[in-house]
Image 1 (cartoon, rainbow, N blue to C red):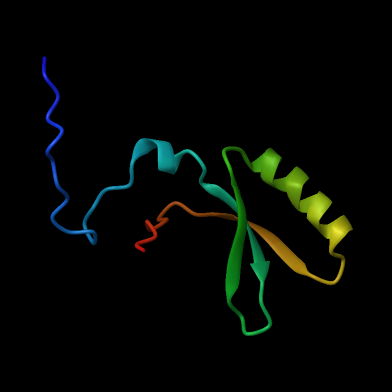
Image 2 (tube, rainbow, N blue to C red; image 1 turned 30 degrees about the vertical axis):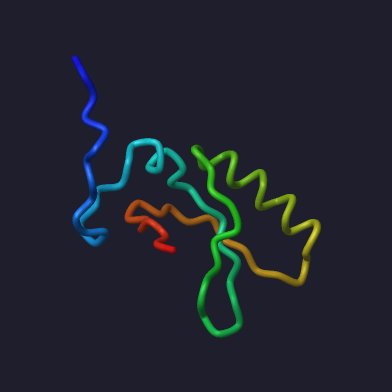
Length: 78
């Protein structure tokens, strides 16, 4: 069966998130002073994220980190 390689996305707003992108739903967020959060890394499992966060806390003891589950992650549009 031939593949249709000419499919073009019409709108980025309603574009579903691909399965591969949904695999890394656990993220480590760095808490900023202005109550915003910056995603530092993404992981497939919570235990991987917890282990990495412990290492980050050792390396940067003055920073605040938290593990978050990001199920509605949006695709970055450049």
